[in-house]
Length: 221
Image (cartoon, rainbow, N blue to C red; front, side, top):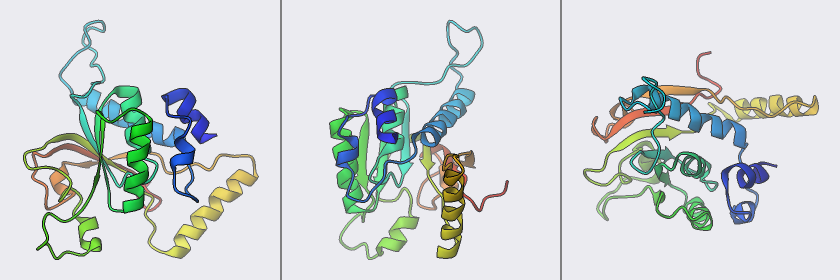
């Protein structure tokens, strides 16, 4: 169903599901699309450009002049795919898993988004960089953004769970909802983190204009 929604509503390639690694599910599309639209609203509120046809009502910025970054894009590359399809934004999709990088790049190719989505593996700057993968995973922009490169926003998708037990409890809650005919929703609210420099000590404050992430199950209500 989610793959069908991507094909029907966002022009994704019919091969989308087949490209994903075995055992990988297509993420729920409505919640992911909602996050992208929340980001669009935030950019609209921040812009000083007004729509000529709407008086003083600000317009959602569209086109490749808007540059965003999806932190941990995963094998599905779903956020950049929706952002490029709906708004024509240029997206940097970062990922540390080699298999997810390969899948995301194939999805980009299949959807004809090569000029809009750049999948980058977060890695070491040079051979003398002795940080391990865990350390690199916390350096969100380090090794991804090029020198002098700036982005308008970044986005990130939890949930992050404090323990395996917490994950199992949340998964059981979703399954109970499905058994009652409901939808396995996730915590789809968009939270503003602030300037990118507060997200990563390795990013200068002027590299990222606005940072957002979806609120996970442990955030305040």
